[in-house]
Length: 102
Image 1: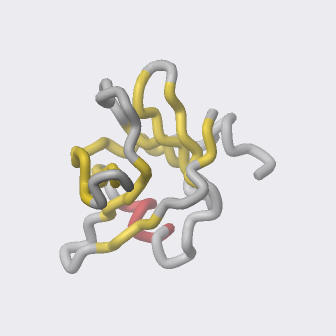
Image 2: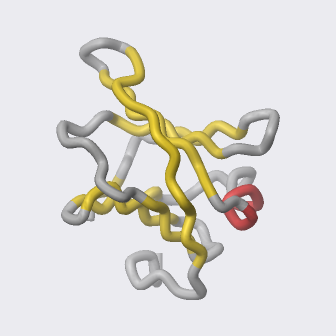
């Protein structure tokens, strides 16, 4: 699992969560966010690529708790722009083994 150290979350006027992360080389495959209601979320970008969103901002948590989808913007430093954007489902679970005890 990889920690996404430099991510941001924007909440649109409509209440949509937009996660801004660094761009990856490969395209995402069936991406989703796994969330247990705590301070962290796990982003499954590809089968072999799992990213931890550590210490979510307290303003984001209420939106994440009630959202079914979010948007991901992958930012590429080389072109200084968004390299790809896509929607992801948020799967709500009672317990996320990857974020226990964090």
